[in-house]
Length: 135
Image 1: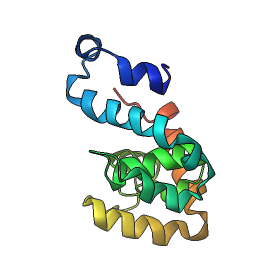
Image 2: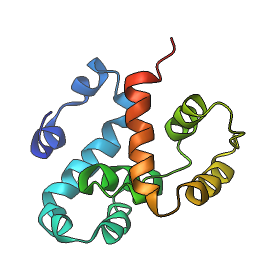
Image 3: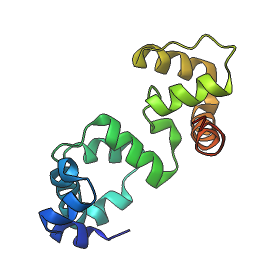
């Protein structure tokens, strides 16, 4: 993976070749923000990092939560209503009547997982990555 400095300096064509033209501005904004704020961000507690990341142009709560979960391994911050969690939970536990609406699923997921929310979210995502591909 390229480092933040490389991403910040990539020409527009590099994103086009990769099919990432639409994501060029957010990726370059995030790279520039990381170059400026990265040292501070690495010292923040995870919940505060989620808030700080949302100050970057075009980074919302979902992206900030997912990035923080990935970076800190605090999966309680992951957006639990995410399509991947919904899809893999439904495949892993097909007898459960999971809500299909994102907010309803997230509420139920948090209740079902209880204090194992982070571990079960990570497990479900990992299970889906390895076993959930049904195509």
